[in-house]
Image (tube, rainbow, N blue to C red; front, side, top):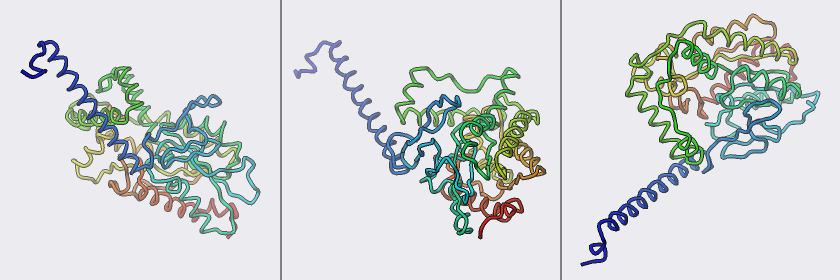
Length: 367
């Protein structure tokens, strides 16, 4: 009789439990190392791409000054752009970029591949006698009303000549949620326990598992279809966006020479195969569970229509972008965030359209 057979049933059960738990822990540890290794090869870091901290002056969650995390480099002022002097040199045209994660561009391979940097680099190349620099003052999850605070308290003092405003999807998420709450809807997702929320902050594996299970669950439930309670997109959901954007544009115009507002580009397009649309809509549903495919398409169209209203304002340039970037995995890392390729297409398009505009030429740029 061997030692295990000689054990009492209780001790044998305990030993088996310990061995199984050790095996499970080992497999989880290997999986954690695996996903972090994958992140390292993709982004150059094992530790995730979160660089935000609470900023006491603005009350916003903003990039941490001097943070270096994988491809993300934040300057000493908390901007994802090169260092700059607070007092703008007289011979410099300074660009400022306001927006959320689609302007911050955590998904691209380096600061140089952020579309804000691509615009500045292209302008410098095209106008070698004129100095350009830029401030990328964006932050993930930021909405228009927060960009107004950001502009007033962090950006305006650096005297930007041209202010870019790229907003839409975060405001759609917030305003559709408010509309759904007003109608008594409950998000079609389970609450996450506090301990698991803490676990997701330290375990990349747990975070990925949760997000993927959510997407799979949404697909099974038909989140992008009509199998779960939905609210139809209504033009009233643009009301607050129009109010907030008007205030932001007016504030930007009070301290700069030109405001540029690109229309918003997403991976979801009206002319796509329905199954492909469903795949993209399921990703969007993670943050906007109350809209279906048609709702997403109507929302992007309506918010872009609001943006176009500002084209009639003096010293405001609206640039069409939603149709120039194909809705493919080559251009989008998910549903709205750009890859290097998508960011390059957007940056070069905006640089060209800006340079060709009468508003830009009126700034008397040195050739």
